[in-house]
Image 1 (cartoon, rainbow, N blue to C red):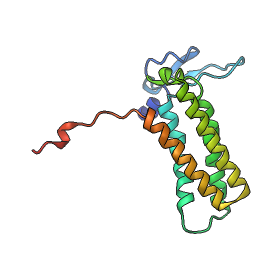
Image 2: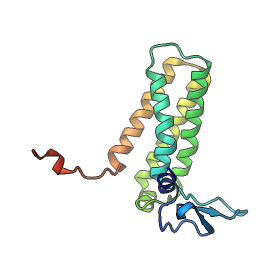
Image 3: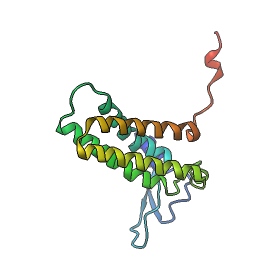
Image 4: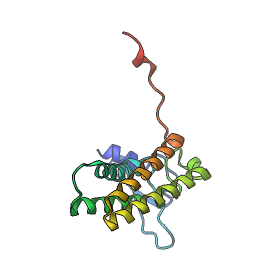
Length: 169
């Protein structure tokens, strides 16, 4: 768990930790000294943000928007917290991440536009949650899903398929 968490939090050899002090547990995570002037560096690759925050939050919204039962107070609270996570994480996606592909993405205007679209769709979800308007929540969850898929179609980097899996043995 520590190794995989470390891979999500701080890529090996990352040059985005100028204030790193001492490594912890097998060098996976690095402590950072307190910064009093300006924002902290984003030590998490975009992939870590996607897996650690965005996927959980978006899937929670999608699940709640497709349930047949009425949403109760806990459901509305969960949807609201998920929307807040997405709004905040979209801000982090607008910063240069520490992953191998993050610098290239960050400099691409299409990436920044899609990150803005993610934040806007998330704000609209939050507004529907605040109003407890189920029809609008479903509509905005669909907008969020479309926004995510559009970005994935352009930017998701998947490993090439292993063609040996298709061979008859």
